[in-house]
Image 1 (cartoon, one colour):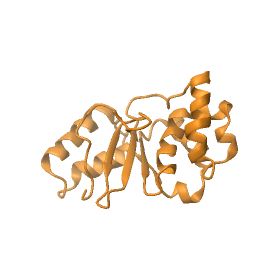
Image 2 (image 1 turned 30 degrees about the vertical axis):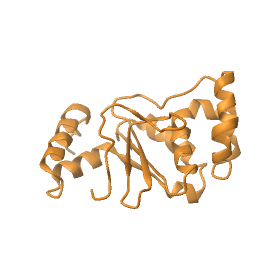
Image 3 (image 1 turned 90 degrees about the vertical axis):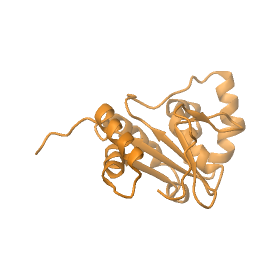
Image 4 (image 1 turned 90 degrees about the horizontal axis):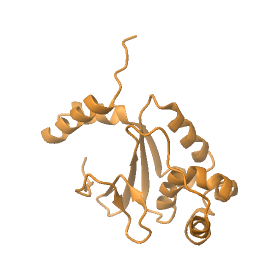
Length: 171
């Protein structure tokens, strides 16, 4: 996995200026950031209450960066706040033309996939090309089985597999 630098912290990290929480960040070899939202056991994406502080933040921070990239309905309080965590991650990519966002979701949690797909269907192609959605099972399997991955990372992938990935029944 050349070109990535883990943040070195197993806790959620914060982007500096806005203090938005993300699960993992890394820099590509060219210095461009990638933000990764990992859903292992959560039932859904985070929401926000449409209180005054959040409404001001929507108008002041998020709308300006997202306006050219998303359908206007996503920027209404009625739609934005129920999709807050998804749109915060999309915002991270929208505000930096070199940034990417990765969503890692369990295949079995169709509610997460559906909610994310509804939002991403309203994102411009230019931004959507910098957003990747992948099943956590595929990433863990690839990490666990690749001889190119260092042994300690393969071991961590194995532990994640055991703890978080629901085994599929043979067909």
